[in-house]
Length: 312
Image (cartoon, rainbow, N blue to C red; front, top):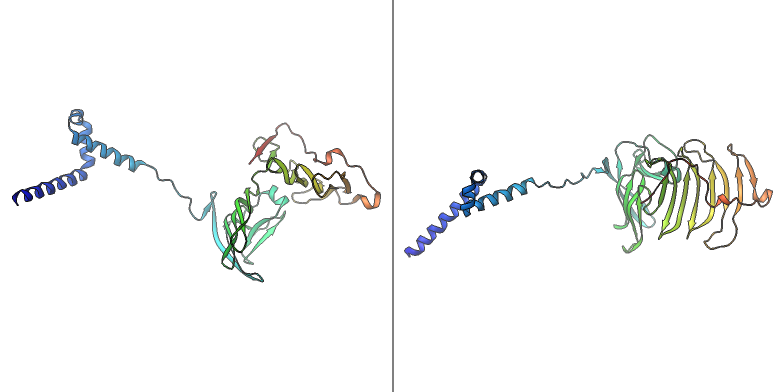
């Protein structure tokens, strides 16, 4: 009985000693660190030093900062939603938009619609080639639900699609998956007039190494020069060239018609031509067939001394 009590007392004393050492850990570790002989000869002191170093290392570790929920790419955003009742059921769109009106990418806005929130109408709108004072561009996560099930989700970057976008059917089965970067297809090849990559020259959509998708060419001033579409490295459908006129004004210069499908050997034909005032100079039905210039397959762009290319 006496032996048991002695063991209990010893264990209690040992626990109290360890607790006291932990409380005095920083001071004791400093004292031990200053005495090299004690550090070498005293195992308990060495243990205190190791514990102090481990504690200091844990304290010094930087915890990665999470991006605030109201920020996206360094821009303040706000969350909102819109509910609509349609013949297919109830649609709910959950989106984020910039708090302050900002101008969209001029190159992107010249060729496709940017999406923005109109607070006055409480509706999402799409605009092509226009700046408006109340444009709150969509910027951040987006999700669309129908009857409580997700049918589309992705991200927006200043009004254009960004990141991975997915579309689902009503049973939440994936229908389509596409990747974007700042509004352009992620695999697009983009060339620039300048080495700073600010003056865009050409955008060529690429799919599995082939030219496949929309094609855009721009003047050095940012105006649209030409647009068309490729399928498996072949131009298809209607291609348009434009006069360099104004910021967003796209006055047509020439319309060329290519085969509707790739690998069709039908030669292209010029359909119409206009002058820079919009006057019709040539019409296929009126004037008969006109030979297509070789440069029509790939419209010329102004050459500069500096030219760079980029692939996302």
